[in-house]
Length: 270
Image 1: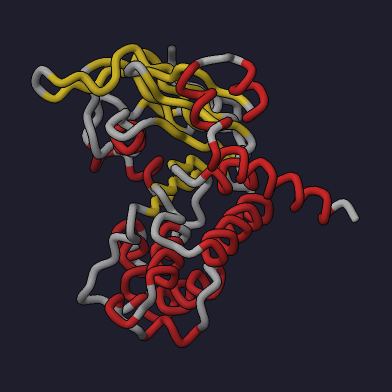
Image 2: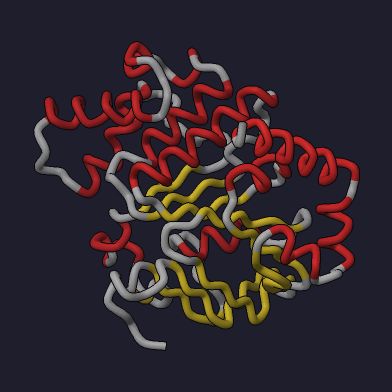
């Protein structure tokens, strides 16, 4: 595989990925292609390496083997600080928001702006940060608040605002609805879908939330047996007959999520 023009290549291509920590093998021969403009949900059992996969794609984890291409550029085997031209084109929401506790929400959003565009004036940085905070669904007053003054849901949205700071093409979300109540989780799902459609984003979304998978994901990739065992729509995954997939989507929670999704679709069609 060679580098492709960014407008022609899939935004993410993973081939033959291996991640090993000593004798512990997380991934072996993992392949995955993410389509432009989709929300791809990534699921798997605990310890299957969902977050390790994401960290490999964004350059925080150097794989033991394999190749990763993002936005037409090979990421593996390169100095992370040498790829600013690619890295400024994605945003990441880590679990829990991962905000800097000593910075206000606005200052947190300004961090990537300072790193990638140091010549921006302080006034313009503040203006951009304020806009991104509002875009994430927070009130403008949240700009001056510290993370300790925010609820769990507000911290997620503040982390999202920071992930959107650079107008990314790719958005990585790691368990964005974990710890949220059902209403808050549903609102975050709707926001994710709206941002994807209005900003033309491609979204790589790690989640355990079956409601999220049914409501907003175009396809779902399942990690198991150290690789991607299946990728497709939920009906396509269930049709594979794989035991883990069958248990995951046809268990009590899966059936409840499917029923809720059916009701939502029926109401939307009225």
